[in-house]
Length: 270
Ligand code: FPP
Image (cartoon, rainbow, N blue to C red; front, side, top):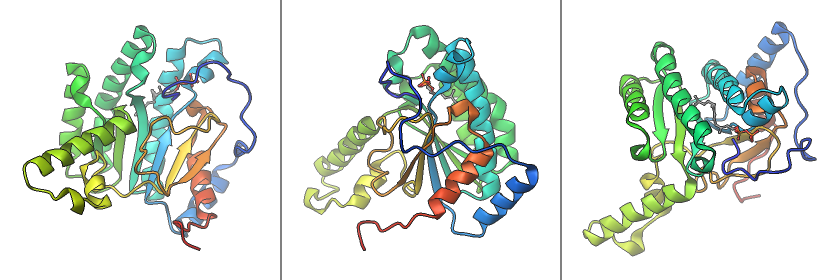
């Protein structure tokens, strides 16, 4: 997603991004899966799914065709995250800035999100996936709200992968809502303002109870956070891939995890 979009230049991937993965065999994929599962996995992987529009443009297709393909990539990514054993997967599906896109594209995305949640619900239930939503759902259409409420309710007791979909989400707005909630507790005399700690802020965010992302993947080669999980990514490992989101495959997710496993995390220490 370009969320918000910088618009304009959509040239080749910037220098320094990881090279695309070559085509590989089923046996190699199985070996890769086994290898990453033999080492500590990231508990939480977050993804900025960018590049649907460019994927469509390169094929002379309307942008919405890219979003349709993007849903397929999202489905495969959720399945792969479950197979790998990742505990939390967060997907940035629609930012609070995406409303500025043409109304027809916004309408299409909303209908697509609603139908995707409806269609995927049986598989989410079957695969023990717990769905959570990040962002402000109250300003979404009643149809989208109904779909996500039903899916969240139907999966809330599931104990496998937690899938967090960021929908009408903006990191700054999330922080403003958290600050308001904390200020409300101060006004009611429930909280001493000088005793507010980082854990209080974390606990007031939409991600309460979820560990911060260990790995953030952004597809399509743009080096931006786009207002995504601003508080939570303080020590997250970042990976920018040139791959456009509809082309992102389960193997790309495994390679991203392998890249993460080669890194040394110091959290500000030595
Ligand atoms: C970015 O491509 C993608 C989005 C705006 C998000 C929409 C994502 C999907 C439809 C995937 C499905 C997700 C779920 C959870 C069902 P872009 O339009 O910004 O591409 P561009 O940068 O090439 O224009």
